[in-house]
Amino acid sequence: MAFDVAAIRAQFPILDPAAHGRPLHYLDNGATAQMPQAVLDAVIRHETRHRANVKRSVHFLAEAATEAYDQARDAMAAYVNAAGADEIVFTSGCTAAINLVAHSFGALLKPGDEVVFSTLEHHSNIVPWHMLAKRAGVVVKAIPVTAEGRLDLAALPKVIGPRCKLVAVTHVSNVTGAETDVAALVAAARAVGAKVLLDGAQRAPHGPIDVAALGVDFYAFSGHKMFGPNGIGVLWGRGELLARMPPFLGGGEMITRVTLEETSFAEPPRRFEAGTPPIAQAVGMAAAARWIESVDQEAAHAHLQKLTARLLDGLDGMKKVRVIGPTGLQARFPVVSFAVEGAHPHDICQMLDEDGVALRGGHHCAQPLMAAFGVTGTTRASLALYNDAGDIDALLAGLDRTIRRLTA
Amino acid sequence: MSDLYQTDLLRMAAAADGAGRLDEPRVSATLDNPLCGDRVTMDIRLDGDRVAALAHETKACVVCQAASAVIARHAGGLTAEALAAELGAVDALLKGEAAGAGHWAELDVFRPVARVKSRHACVRLPFRALEAAFKAAKAS
Image (tube, rainbow over all chains, first blue to last red; front, side, top):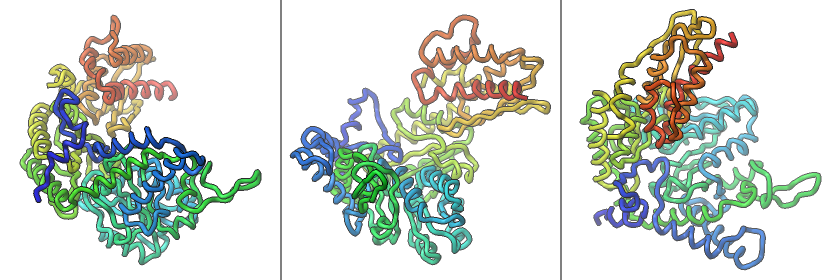
């Protein structure tokens, strides 16, 4: 069955050009994806019919809110194939999820223990480990990247040593779109008894995840990149690991008992959800997960592969353009970055905005990767399943004009 | 085409007045734009409290390059106080207000940047880098 992109687009009110009085070719999905009507409806329905705090009061609205929040946790557990809903911790986003691990799992580490990340990482998967290193004397090491913008797996034996306790890397690069060979990484980590965290922010929008099959220990991702609301994310962690970890934030609802002298903590996931959680956002994120699951995954994948090929082919034909990342379709997701000789990414993005093409320019919170490629920034097109050939063609046509203007 | 990328601004950036580094003795300051990783290094040599020589290394967008070039055009004899007044004029322009009389005429090319808040820092970065260079000179 052909993928009906027009039917998909029609579900996203913000993509209607009439809403803006100008064209919109939204290709900044790696930063924030748009929300379909089903998600917007779920959030509005919750806020207008079930809004209350959770796990506290006994009135009917509180019961309804608690039920909705629990159902959201169930939905996210199903989305990642968790062993149970108790392995799902709601956070304010992917960054918060990684910071939670850095603090709580990090509290189990000793000075001299090692945490390995990679040159490919978003700053949100680098900075928390630098902070842990300063706080606890943990040593950080980085897996280098290949010229194609992938993890250099040949370097794993050198980087992942006997003192390594955690390998924390991206599942899909937010710059190159490269998909990590998780099996090789897990094997290298397991060989030294280390745990594995995947930053799934760029992978989560592209269909359900199977953490059991991946064989990792932690998986972090955001709602706003997978067609859900802002201010919500998920940390999945193996149950036995979460149970060993101390809390990150203290406050209401994460305790079993508090006296003036001490506190005892609740079991996960409540232990890690101090204070009032982002309830409507969790409901929205769950609605987004269900919406993604309702789409024919195979057809969506084929559609995005076709668009990525169209984009890569178009860029390949342009002088002065260098793709930063894989130029083929193998083991990559629809995130394409490129540098243009003599033209700055922000100037390119600004000029293309005049054509209604929304891109991201800059270092993408990945300055070590930019340094590895010898650039200060790139221009990035990140695709979602509502994008169509017209979006790609608008980008390529506008880019051609922009390059001629900026490099004349 | 965008009024932001008007011909005057592109010409100013391409002219790259003052681009390069000063030989020693010099005082330098380098500032980054955390949004995009752009970097401006300002080198100055002072005669008393006035700029005797200035050069800049601007690894940045054309808006930022143009701002560095404008500063370089007016650098001779510039004081920290005069620079602060010009930055005040820039800030007024970026708020959509009048720059006021007596300021560098070329600043007008940055008026269209007012509507693009994320690019205000591109105009301001070279001014802030030169401010930092003046401070470094005073401290030394």
